[in-house]
Image 1 (cartoon, rainbow, N blue to C red):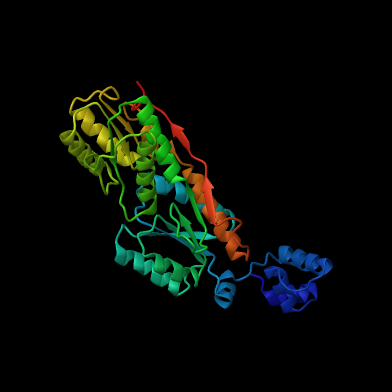
Image 2 (cartoon, rainbow, N blue to C red):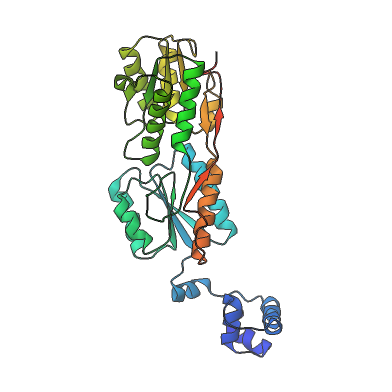
Length: 330
């Protein structure tokens, strides 16, 4: 394998000049650059990336910290991140905290030790003060989350507005009695979706009935249990807005098992448009957020910051779409 000294000797330049060509820094004439690149190709020279990264403390690695690697929404976001990272010669490491604060802090320790060039936090269950601290060490991008007045770029949909519109759809097209299965209230997007639900009720002159709002749910099992609570507290017909699709499918299954007609007696809408939402019977009304694009956009912002560019926009709000299906349409 050729060495940098051999390249320099054949190109009749110094090793420092070869290094500047490889790293694309310092004043180099186009003639000299072309001559060095030609020799590099002839000798099939490959620079020692590990050694160079050790000197510059650059790892070409991005960490994404998330709470559930099995979540289908997060899986699509990760794919978007990884595709962009790979095409730019970066490696994406996945830190799956499993909603365990101690595991999350292990990844934080790695960032404090600069074992990655940057971090993308996805719906973090981490104290905001820690995220702000990490942002002073390495660049940070937030996905499906935001920290006001922090100047940390975020990528998401308008969860408040989307929840408002899906609630408005159920009010106008289904039953006037309406319940809500809410997500964990330590997550901003869950808080915003609940706020959107409340605002839609208020604007439609409908009362907010706290007994029909079941808090802190995010799984199939949560949805199944929560629908049982709702049907024990009120009679059908009723409409149910749900924090996410996975929980909504659990709620749908409980209602079907109890013999409820969907949507004539119970209409249901979720959020995310995961793959199975179009396969369950009846198919689930939902909000489609561009999961892959959210992940890809977050990585593009990260790589731009690593190249010294300021984010063009701190809040990157992507478009969403209401997907109306049989679970809410008569």
